[in-house]
Picture 1: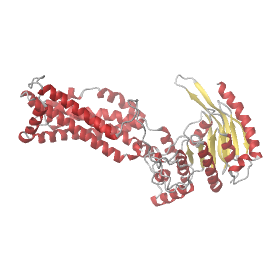
Picture 2: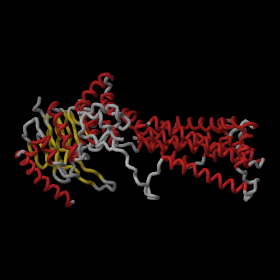
Picture 3: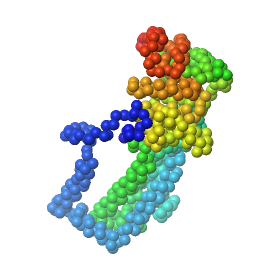
Picture 4: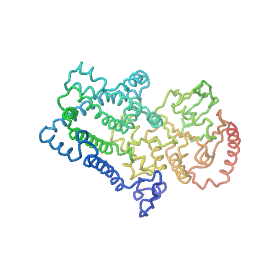
Length: 287
Length: 262
């Protein structure tokens, strides 16, 4: 958005006020690459796929093409879902899972963000830690589960640690890259304005990288959700993953699918909230 | 004191080492003096090393030989005593215009009330009143560079270093910015070192033009500009101005042709 010209003390460099002109209906070019889509059409298209997906699923199950033993119909799934909430205290499972994900993720963020900032800002620290962290990043978090059970038992500490291991190295590296790719000219400008090394890190590198760091956290939170279910599949007495394992033993595909959908919905909500908070906090970065 | 050399560049040269160890000489040893309250432009074809010299004075780059003295003290790194305005837009995008201008004052630990007062003064000076709470991306390029000038001036540096600050602006805006800067200089008499490749710009604002040779750079000649102050844009059509322009055009032409052969 350009500055409004009404308050301009000097009209000299103010850009031409194109915003005032009534918007002419612009012809949309059908299927032209990179042509933007309107907000309403975007919403309809996005919702449309869900409808198509459920329709195909319903046709396959209700039409008798797939045995109900292997795949429940949408109706059965909803009924089973209702039962989960009313009979099996599913809210408690959801609460446990959310707590584990958020707890492990916050723990990882508290450790990883400062470390990543240090690595991005100071190259010797990066040279010292980067090879090790890169190595750890490729270790699958789920492979640690047996070891973690050995160390931390099957209680909450083990679940939190799975999330922690799965998230911490990813966050460190991505934050380090974000901070390290700060604009050099802004850093130089800060130095010529009298900033010291500390001032440059605190008041140039960190605020400049903040939107990128927030975006990294949003992404990694999404990944954390995939680890928690694995952690709950083994050695657990509550949580969505635990419910899924129980349902598998009873061949209740309706409950399994309902559990998966609940995870998806919670993920979508948390992602949406995260995005909204980021937009509010870092309004300048989307100007 | 006014006749003293405030800035001395002594036998400063710069050689860059490439990734495979090959070295490129960007700057041959340069000797150069700037008096207090002087306005010097450094004119040269692109890639001639004039920006390198300015960055060395600013402490953002280091000379391979020689040294830079400011008020007799060797320059060892960047500092608030040498304010810099860059060609690229270097306002902090997360700060408002007013906060950008206060940046250096805040780093210095000046009380907030005083920061605000000083920022308001320079915002008025560069004609940005009403835009204090805007973010840089909401302003045009010319307005952003005006903010950058105000930010550098608010810090009260001993010398203002300008690296083609109007290079990315369109021609009309650029001319207006030159008048604005010259007006500020005429009022405040700051020492200014201004790098440009634009001959009109070099003459219009300067008391002295230093012409750079093609790479490897060195100062080929220094030409005094004795046009009276305050200068009005109409001076650009005066015979004196035209004569200087003709002379500098000749000097630069030879260097540009030399640069083109490399």
